[in-house]
Image (cartoon, rainbow, N blue to C red; front, side):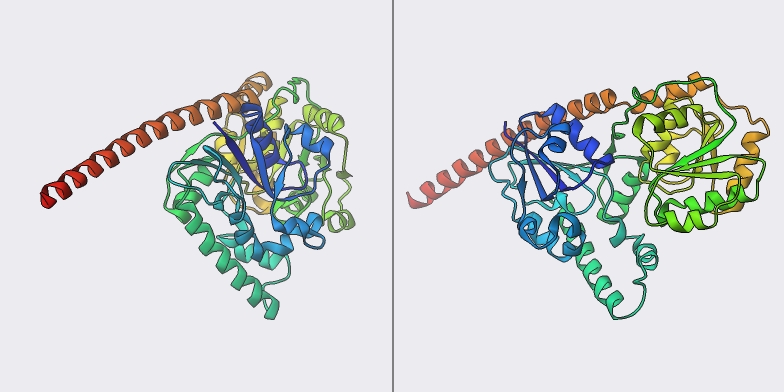
Length: 396
């Protein structure tokens, strides 16, 4: 059996690349296809890429490795030029166009969907506003391109045999936008690396890339109104300067910290605060693996990963007032599970669990596919024989 794995682009390590690594652990001989490869050989090796990566024509365009998003209008055509004809099983790891590869009726295409294209669907207006492109001629052009992307996104979903969603939230988005059912397999989280620590210090923590949709500014503003509570902010990104410029005395902005140091900060925190609406949300799971409860926005993937009133506390509005209310509720002695129980809850999202579930899922779908192909070929042969007999009878 020849296996192809299709990933949108390979430029940096993130949650999607951890999924890719696990897929390649299951199928170590698989060929990898992507629109653009900007990773060094050492980074590719670290995620399990053993064969040469096949890229699209976008790879050869100017500044493609860093400005690949500028080529969004070309991506549907580029992904369809990747030749899948020699493969029995195609697995796409898709959050943009990877699921759009062209496959035939005898090939099995399983798509692990991190999300339908976020900025082309329900988050379109939010992305345009945050990037300053919500009005004017440039906005008109971008909206036209996103309309084309939506059309492609729906059309290409028809050719996927089976969808896997990374959360029940994404399962609902797949059903809403594509009219397709999806099975949920939570993505892999390094729960072993984030070890349990039962003794906690007297500070709260948040950690994420400092971009608008993460809503870190809301968390900082909430703690401005709670000067007796300490907050550590870890991360860097476009909003770093804005957050740093107006930092209250009880909030410490650490920026980037080394991975091992990050783990220690999360292990010692009394609670992890998170205000983003995530497709899944890996960092809150890592926090729980440390036995650190999560105070988080109760929508999106967090609904699956944080048990309200047990491993954390949900708030339901992305406002500083809601964050303050949730932090006060936590600090006033709301009875949650112990650090050991919170850590045990996080284990269900481990890498080993993901790889076992995905392997079993693919085996079942492959067996079903082979049986269906055998039945279809048998019916085709019967129909051909009936046609031959009828033709012969007519000729006689």
